[in-house]
Length: 179
Image 1 (cartoon, rainbow, N blue to C red):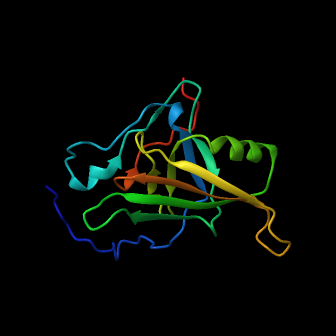
Image 2 (cartoon, helix red, strand yellow):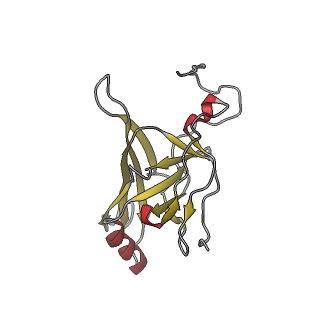
């Protein structure tokens, strides 16, 4: 049974309510993760029920990769799924990665056939986990040169998944190759 507290903003705590995302997020193919960490089953504090506090463990030679999120175009949304008796979320991260290179072309082509866990920090530094072992995310990108007076050429994309809960990732992001 749930333990409910107040559902109000943290006014007066010095926290910002600024929207948007930080410029760097992280992705890792689910095939590259040896051990998926999950929230505690019965945490002491009920508010920790949807927090992952231990880092995911990558397979040998694998790690999370950085993904750039344009500060003007980056956004994250959770939309409720189903009718009044339904549940879960459709999660979408919007991003724009400026430029074009062999590395970006490789990533755009390869990522379309893979499934991911994405760790996306908001402006406050709260890291949202997008995707789970059983409900991984996909990364979809489109490329455009734009017009001369536009935003510049680059990859407009989104990370999308359907997952039962909004998850907060409070552990270290594995950014060095696992041994």
